[in-house]
Amino acid sequence: MNGKIDVPPQNLVSVCVPLGGYLKSTKLLPGMPVKKGEVIALIEDQEYVQIQEEFLLTKSKLYFAEKEFNRQKELNQSQASSDKITQQAESEYKNYRIKLSALKEKLKLINIDADKLSENTLSKTIPLYSPINGFVSKINVNIGKYINSTDIIFDLVNPSDIHLNLKIYEKDIDKISIGNKVYAYSNTNPTKRYKCEIILISKDVNTDGTTEVHCHFDQYDHSLIPGMYMNGELQIQSASVNALPEESIVNFEGGSYVFVQKSKNLFEMREVKIGNRENGFIEIMDAAGMNNPNIATKGAYSLLMKLKNKED
Image 1: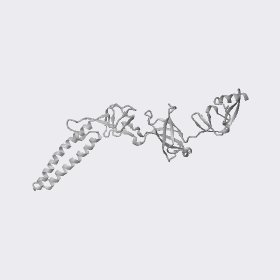
Image 2: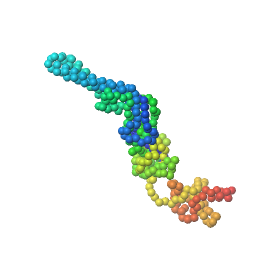
Image 3: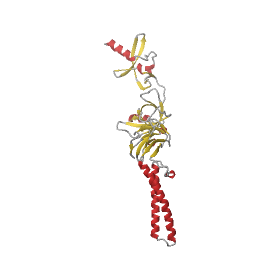
């Protein structure tokens, strides 16, 4: 089996700037760890100042609109003010309340605390916080570039649920089940094995005749990153079988053969039935093929070549 390291959608986060702006600074690099709530970038734009200004002005107008509304209510009770004027004052007061609430939500989008905002804290720069604990997968912008609200700045990955997505052929699906152990390894380091467990078997068959098998790592290694190509060996069951090293068996004219030593320089070619291959060994299905202790355990191909040359 083979496949790639994958991350479920809920553990892959794309970071954007809701209102756009210029990337002023960031210290992030691909692979760098991040903690939830830490500042990962600073974004700059004049629009941020305008929103803050509008919020403070609306807040001030709301204060006076509320005062005027309360004054008109008192006058109306004593018939010193008409109902129409009182209703107009109430409408203006409510309009400012709605506008202030909307501006407060805008400030939340750009990570500005409206309750702490004053004329002395206006800023054209806003912080961008990491929404998760994890590491940086991709950086899609550079410092000084303008970022639209739809642009993805960073891709962050939470490795707590990283898994291995392998493909298995349809004919082998009935041989596996949830809970089976899988040993995964990369092409660059095939000797290092990662123990996994099958947690999900897809019910769909792809056009190439394969089905996806999802596995969890028993212990996550930070050197494993999403998209990395991996091979997998499935442990279906443990059993003791007769086996020989691969180099002791040759294929000749459609059959599998071993060489049995009859004397010092005399070997006899004997056909055997073979089964599964694993870790450099081949299963011998017929027990009779293993009865002779003088089977050559290596160099079978060289013996075959010498035999053919002798016949020629």
